[in-house]
Image (tube, rainbow, N blue to C red; front, top):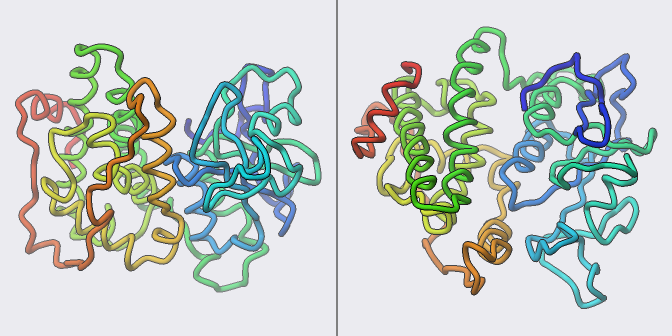
Amino acid sequence: MEYDPSKPVHAGPGDGWHGVVAPGTHFAPESGRYHLYMAYFCPFAHRANLTRVLKGLDSAIDISVVKAYPKGDAGWSFPGANGPNDTYEGSTPDKLFGSKYLHEIYFKADKDYKGKYSVPVLWDTKEGTIVNNESLEILRWLQTGFNEILPQGSPQRDLTLYPEHLRAKIDEVKTWITRDFNSGVYKAGFAKDQATYEKNVIPVFAAMNQLEKLIHKNGGPYVLGKELTELDIVSYTTSIRFDVVYVQHFKVNLGTIRGSYPVIHEWLKNLYWNVKGFRETTNFKHIKENYTKSHTDINPLAITPLGPFPNIETGVNLDFSSIQPGVVAHPDVLEYQKGLPDV
């Protein structure tokens, strides 16, 4: 959901939360005031946590991390929900309230809440409520909301992922990236019949074909060239999960990043290995075990594949001009790609 400052913070039990942290607002920027509930497995929570780290807000905004599985009828849980031996590496207790389940946080903010118990959730300890639970909104305003508490002249304070001169292109590309790639893998993966699956797997690879062309045209190392933008964030959090889980689990197997998209592959490896914040916020154990052990309708035996190995390859080639872009040339993919905006 796109950032819209005119939205009410919370319109009622059927609505999410759309608050904005900014100077002079109800939610003023203060170190230690806000707490992020997140999950390492979730690409949408990953957006928020990655932006938090890139902006140098690690100490200003602490995190609580739910377990990767099981989800169960009560939703995502924290360690200890099922007794003292209920542990999971990399997850944490609810550091604010000691809750067993994430849904308890939602009901603290609205006892009549009727929506999903999703991550990320940014909590305000001063007002005792949720600020925001929409990842694209958090991604947008987290870039500037806490700048006044960051050191003057620091790279973190100066970092913007939505620079004015690139905004039109970011908005254009993000429309099809979020629709066909970020959400597309889920539409294909959760399809209940063959026709629905085939309809939804095609846009995924059309978007990847287009992303391959876009990065190559701009020369890297980022999607739009020399500047890291929101497009790198939203593309990374799906791409880093693609080969390791989406290909086999969601059956988006017309190609792989490492085998079919050499440009995306180098872009992805560079972010992971060379740009501080990307590797630190990526947890392959949580990613692989969440999907394979919590989606019982897709993988009823909950067996987690060992591969691919390695999770991400080493060695980075930043000479993008020397790379021949790849393409998945399935006829339906190429036809759908024709309808996407030219890169």
